Image 1 (cartoon, one colour):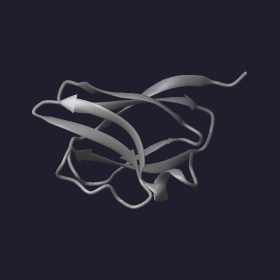
Image 2: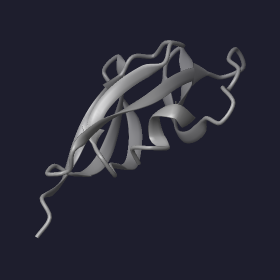
Image 3: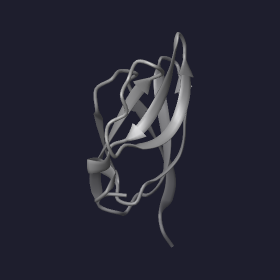
Image 4: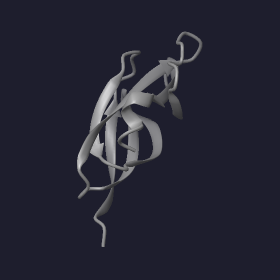
Amino acid sequence: MKARKVWKYPFHPDLEPQTREMPEGAKFLTAQAQGSAIMAWFEVDQDMPRCERTFQTLWTGNSIVPEGAVYLATVQLPPLVWHLYELAEGGASCA
């Protein structure tokens, strides 16, 4: 039986790419505001090898979506609304 769990990863609401180490094949579930951070939940098999995936938070109307980025979720974190994307170079070999 696989050791599947739900893990939570924090993301800072800024425009810089952010890398997170997680088990291979981690499946994105949802993202929501929690305090002053954007939290994203992933279903993981904790026994899988770890790899790095790269994400970026962008705010409405003032950001350009990077080429190849995959949309994951929208999070309201006043005064802005943020959009969480996974960048192609992080998820392609790890997801």
